[in-house]
Image (cartoon, rainbow, N blue to C red; front, side):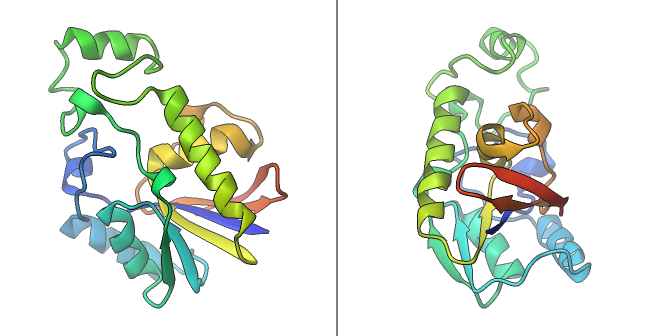
Amino acid sequence: MKVFLIRHGMTPGNELHQYIGGRTDQPLSKQGRALLEEIKAQDVYPSAEHVYISPMIRCKETAEILFPHARQTVVPGLKEMDFGVFEQRSADDMAEDEVYRKWVDGMCEGPIPDGEVKEDFTARCSEAFFNTMKGAEEAAVFVIHGGTIMSILSVYGKPEKSYYDWYVKNGHGYECDWDGSFLQIKNIL
């Protein structure tokens, strides 16, 4: 079955290189909307009658732009990572923050104060994806977050790569084939 994993368009926080996670429900920025329209004009996105989205407004708005006539199904487990005390702050803002430095020096694997641990986040996202795929149609289109895509592909992606190797820019994503166990990457959108 074909699966498309598409990252939402840019938000104001993305433009400022801030951590915009599961607590910050930002809409798309003007530039984010314009870039989505530019990419859409290149005819890289599939057609879709049904789209699975995160509960965040940026995913809903992206899906409305890319798939204006599609029915949207919200999948709560596909929400972005909760960055806790790092939310709405950039790496530059936290350059002298000991807690942030410790987290980065630990390859972003440790706990975030008042936030999620990457391991738990990855388990949440991959479980939500798998459960969604059990009832998916002939082709499944997901409009979700960058971290969510990285989580799903770090568990199910082929060829196997680490979490950070699956990074994708806003408005872009992956076309895959799902065999019930793995996502074979076919194309980068």
